[in-house]
Length: 440
Ligand code: ATP
Ligand code: MG
Ligand code: MG
Ligand code: MG
Image 1 (cartoon, helix red, strand yellow):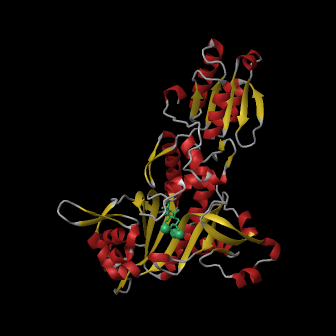
Image 2 (cartoon, rainbow, N blue to C red):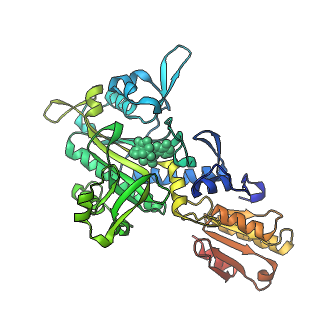
Image 3 (cartoon, rainbow, N blue to C red):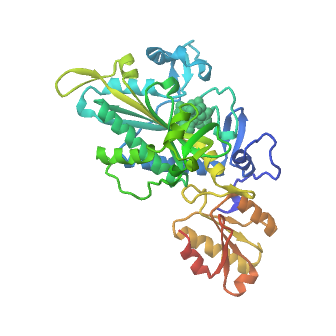
């Protein structure tokens, strides 16, 4: 993409309504625009990162055998009356009437609808295990929408629903989700710690939240410092091997890590050596639940077992805050000049800065680099505007691409361009060929 032809409405001033750094940088970098409280347009740069996060989530869900589908955002109130949640859900639910006077709602989550799909089409244990998931917009009329996309009212969530024949199989589905989530967050450059959580309105006993440590997080967290050293890495895991998957979950959930909702001060002191006790704040970027037959019993989602009896299906639901993740990643990765995107989610792989736009030799060197980068299957953002070098650098630093190639007449005379790493700030003089080799 050439910046002169792109739509990147960068703001010079820091917007006064933004209280936290991720919100400020998302507005300044022209990624989002607020349309109403907690409701945003995703401008091209923000939309690109959102799509990259979605893509990682899809790949990791499909890798463990989960199946994508898409359900509507608008749901009928009657479906929610079957589970009893239409009255219970309270003011977070946006309720709507259509022209016939039928009661509808904008879905805050989809347990009822997916249970309805399941009961309409699945009757036998032979069709299990089954996990269906979607990445779809949700609406929750939050009391205090704030911090930009971090606590929106309309937000994008990956929500997955597991269906199994018995408790053991359902707990395996829970564990499978935990491992797939750990891998997803790591690919986004994040450390997200599974913490034992309280279940809230969805119900159930087995539940973990995934928290990214950040001083601006809304949850208070208590943990053993050793949890921050755990990493899944490139381990090859056989997701059908229940014991192996359980082993990984044990590795990530045995050390003490809890939010204020489940914190046990006495246990914290007895289980964690004093020098490793940490109290901090975290951003909830996902949650997994096993809740058994809560919805299947209420809604008549039964399956025939191998011995011919009919039992309500065992369920769990598992969510990732896709749009919140943009904020969480920026909170975890920035400096005073702007965002520092991890390679896994960056909107463009490299920025190209032309120091002397209109000069025949720098223009042609930039054009050649631009084509060569694309030839490697990478996406460059070429700043070909007629602007001062300082302004070009400030824009690149703000939008946070991991690499910048700077092309100027003086370097070119010696056959060199400059490659700068956004994270370390280190620069290197390289030939045009070497710089392209170095990327990707
Ligand atoms: P929170 O405690 O932050 O209100 P939640 O526990 O109500 O979140 P879940 O029902 O667990 O949310 O939904 C799954 C994920 O969706 C959350 O882990 C979070 O990452 C994301 N999410 C929830 N509410 C919002 C929101 N208002 N804006 C953006 N993302 C959200
Ligand atoms: Mg909530
Ligand atoms: Mg929560
Ligand atoms: Mg939650």
